[in-house]
Structures are given as structure tokens and as C-alpha cells.
Length: 181
Image 1 (spheres, helix red, strand yellow):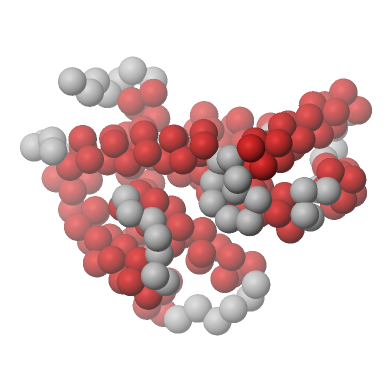
Image 2 (cartoon, helix red, strand yellow):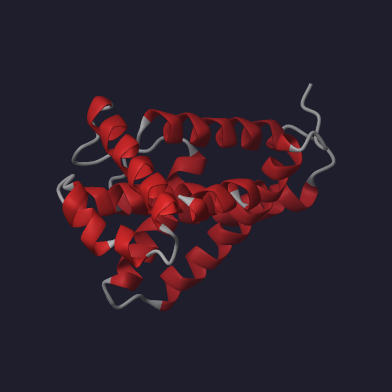
């Protein structure tokens, strides 16, 4: 929870990826708060009031996942809405004449996004969703210690650069330093 807050403030892409991992962690323990307590919450080095706050945060997230019917897959409403907001900013940025570097990074990532969507038969339709899920898939592969070929490493590197730039613009937007008219 504390890490999620920090990521939310600093890097919207890292926050979304972190929250996707939290959702999968909740699914991995079959929404069992006691098991989550044992495997995750107990690992936090904080006092009991903070652990109670963390426990409540996980419990609230579990309830929202059930209410949003994302028990098996998918993302809670507020994460989907946030990803849509990031995608809206991406679309706006693509229409700006003075953002050649951003557009160039996106153009480099675009073929990889299309390839990812095709190979995994991804149901995601926005470029930001595809990019997020490509990175998340990559992280899962690394966690499972699967072999990852050189081309995939290169694709992830290019997609990461595109998303890092987008995240920086999103932070500027939220801080009021980037005006969208």
C-alpha cells in the first residue's frame, strides 16, 4: 500500500504494473485474507497500526475485485480508468506538433506493440494497454525464469522507453505543468 502510493506519485506506469501484480497476488491466494496475511502482509516491517492499514487496503481491493468481477482476470475499474486516462494523454501527445522525440519513441515501439497483440491474441485495444501488458507479461516471464530471446529483450527496451516518456508527461500533466486544451 505504501509502495503503491509512492509509485502512484512518481511513475504512473510503474504504479499500474505494480497494481496488476497485486491483483494477481490476491488471485494466487484465492482471495484468502489469512493466507495473504501470512505470505505478504507479515513481511512488512511496520508497526501493528500500519499493518492493520495495509490489511484493510488489501481487503478493500479484494472486495472491489469481486464487485468488478475480475476474480480470475482483468483489472478493477479504477485501474482501467487510469489506464484510459494515460491513453487519452498519449493520443493528445501524438497530435502535438512539437513533440518529435515522443512521437519517434512511439513509432519505434509501435511494431512491437502490434506484434505483441498479434502473438498473444491480446484482447487489449489501446496502445497503452497493449504496452502495459507486454511489459507485465515480460516481468511474469522473468519471475518464472523462462527463457527470453534477444528480440523480446529489445522489444521490451523500446516499449519501456515509450512508456517512460509517457509517464513523465503524465506526471507533468498531473502537476499542472502540462496544459491540455
